[in-house]
Structures are given as structure tokens and as C-alpha cells.
Amino acid sequence: MLLFYLFLIITITSIFLAIKKQRPILLSVPIAALFTYAVVEIALVPAPFLDTVKFIFSLR
Image 1 (tube, rainbow, N blue to C red):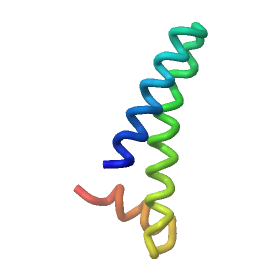
Image 2: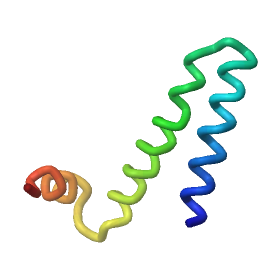
Image 3: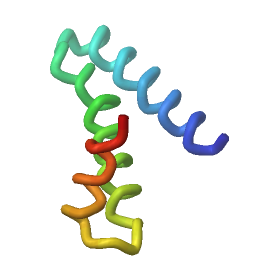
């Protein structure tokens, strides 16, 4: 639940700053945070990184 609130704060902050500073590139911050989180979670799997990625994408 903590991660949910963290991502919610990141999203709200980036939306607020994007509107205030008129920089739409700030809206990519939550997407980058989610991508980074996913890469870290994949890296925590005790199998080799590429084997883990292949396994995830081979699931149907």
C-alpha cells in the first residue's frame, strides 16, 4: 500500500508542476518511475535477468 501512495504522490506532484511550470515533459516522470520500479522488481528475481525477462514475455 505504501508503494501505491508513493506513486500517487509522484503523479500528483508531476501534474501540479507540469501545469505550474508549463512543461509537459514532467508528465513522463510517473511513467519513468513505474518503469524503474518494474526493472528493479525483475532484477530482484534470483534467476538471471535475461532469462527472467524471456520468461515474463513468454507467458500467455
